[in-house]
Image (cartoon, rainbow, N blue to C red; front, side, top):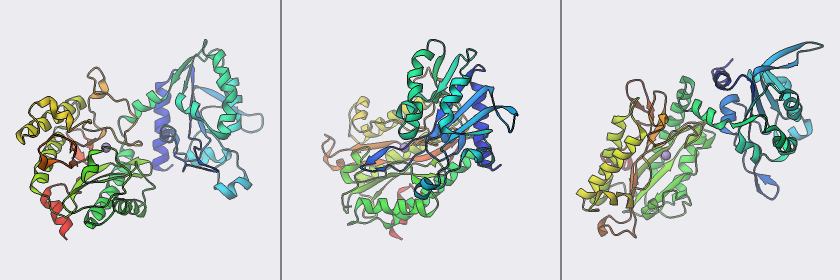
Length: 441
Ligand SMILES: [Mn+2]
């Protein structure tokens, strides 16, 4: 069994431990989403389903049964299994158009999942195994209601059955439990995240070294995304942001249609997805290759806060503390530069948190909260988070005129280790002198 398949198996085993013995758990994979006329968006496998299976085909579902399910094991023979993967029927004529299908016969051999069945059998299995002894049913409920195509048709009866089921069975959303597992990354996951971060760094180095006045924002984007693919990342982690000048003050600017102007800064926030795992980097650099005095002042403030926050990261530290620290430190700096008078005004120029968990999702779907009553506020070894303070002084703001139109964010990906942390994106320059060198060569 490959490292990756062993990882997915270990995740199923962990989840089986977390759910009630008298329960069934059903996790749906992704189905196609319509884009226009007769074509769909590129299929994005559901992240929780991927976490448990590594299987990339649409129209699949995983059934977990801690108490076991009796399945056929050849002529007049039966066995008990805890994992069944339902997959698309093999179909030679469809496969000519849409590619090879694994087929239920190959599920065990190819994925290491105990038992495979064709997806049209889901309702049969549910009906015969939802016995009176089963009192909990775990489902990824949002995905159940977002099903399309053949899976929707297969599950229509189930929607109606829920009316008569729910008085007897606790219906529980399983995404919460999987999110708990995803909070701490395994060794295998950390190795994938490092690879993803490495590709992202290489792409940024190439893009930054090509920046100059007259380029369009989308051309910078294309250098990044070319490199992602060229180095084996299958996808972008999210829509790439290349925001020059005042555009940087729109936090999720992603139209990328403007031209880079000498004298402006350009903020680049982008990431790739390598084998399912995401990186997320932001760098802000001068279009001309040299920072102006005012740009330097704001940049140094953001950079110092970013470095100080990273120094504080170790197990036991609260994310809410890091967020508060960032806000206070940026406020202090803005007061010193006479951009604000009172600490509370910092939210005019800094309106987001300091970071987020990162993994199979860019804003990783793990149990998460800045509220101190959540345990998940406390960082643990194996967490991977971003650290991304920023300041956005829009043209329309009432700051001193010389600072208007400056938007800066600096973001790195950080692994929490036993004794501190490791910056996965450390090899990408962020000090002013290093960036200016990189852009002049
Ligand atoms: Mn981010």
